[in-house]
Length: 306
Length: 309
Image 1 (cartoon, each protein chain N blue to C red):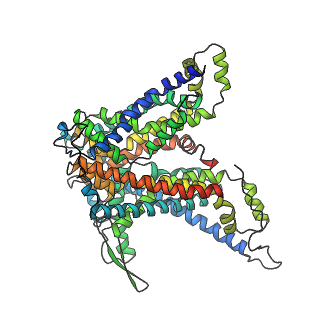
Image 2: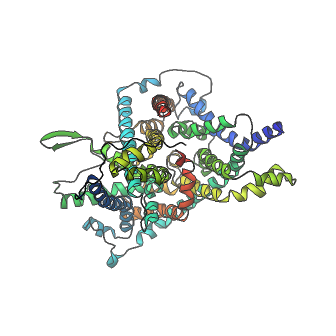
Image 3: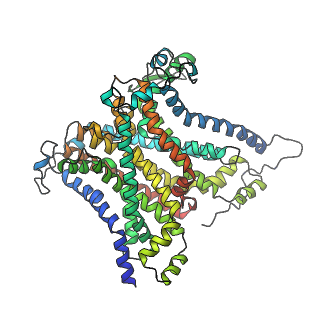
């Protein structure tokens, strides 16, 4: 019986296994090989699996421009993730108590996440357009801006606040804000599911003991949400770190927003340099794996203790 | 999960002293009562406004947009649906050919749904029900695949399909999409199979039903809600996908998907913004309709197990 079950299990799973093996795992392994070969689109037909190998592709990886785009990727992922989770948490808390129409509002809150990326990036770039964009129009009208702000094509801007001069990266901040808008629904969805599962009696007990809303949040709600927040941080960080579409469609990687995924894409298509693109993608995956590993090692343990 | 109950009393017991109404508790409750509505209204505006803007721009004449970029009312006086006509008309007749792109997108998305379900249903059933060597490892590998950078996967697949000469074909895209959605399909379906009690299947097996018969007659009908929500979810992923469509199809315009078509035309100056906004609406509308039709199924399927923490 056990052997029969074993055979049935493998048989039922085999189409999936073959597909994932051929279309995902073998290609990933092939990238490892490509990263050590001189492969261009032009000589693609002459390349074999075995040799000649070279490490020249990694010259491009350990160059200042790669480290710049790595820094940009980090800033984009960290602020994008933190912003999305924070906004998702605020939304989940605000929509916690039932009211008429809450179901509809909850559902609408998820639309930015499910809508096609090409349509929303196009709408955002039209809204932010310096010539006929809505934001600049009302900014000049109502907020007294002297001239249009090219949100998506300006690298940096001098801003004075409380008498201090700052230089802020305009385009990078804009794409981070877009990322927060786009992905907060994901955090909202999971935090809402978790909040709903907290028994009311817990908070009721605290209320009877005289805990104020803020105290109830920090001592009752937040500790219950921490595992979910930790899970969301890892997932969102990984996805943002790998993301290509959003930045490619908003800025094309210009004005100081070039993340590594866009660099890789440009090496692959514009230069047709498959080897260099593979080398960079590989380093990207390694760095990501390293960071996630460190995170899980340090924070995964802490949770178990508490 | 055991719930850690706070046993010690809060730092500042704020039991209201007799006579004073403005305790910390009362103030906080009042402030948050108001703030809550401010936040809700703000969030609704921020999430929905871009879609409203998309829609009104698609029905305004171009010169009216250039004259008054700040207008936000629906222009009943100059309602103009010509942008939709222009975006849907085939390219030969002076339009942008989106009708064809919609056909391509629908074909790829429906194909992805169909094939991924056919492949994943037996797989998810096996992982959920059958005790065989390596089933835990298989789940872990699938999850790891889902977290890999898709740009890394894009390079070898691009190279492979270029080399075998299939790169410009929709079928190449279809294969890649199926492989991409399989892990999440298996994950969602397996979660659902886990919630179905095995007693029904055992009864059917005792009555002499074969394993495949049990799967087809008992498990499949019971899992229908999950299968439908999963199909819709996969449809949305495939319909929205951009990176692989761009890499594979950019040089073969007849095979463009809606997403790719919109992104390519957005870069050119010849096509008016209002026409492109009509394209955005056409791209977004099917997703919004599916989403609202199946919102309950979708969110429950995704967050299943999440409330356990």
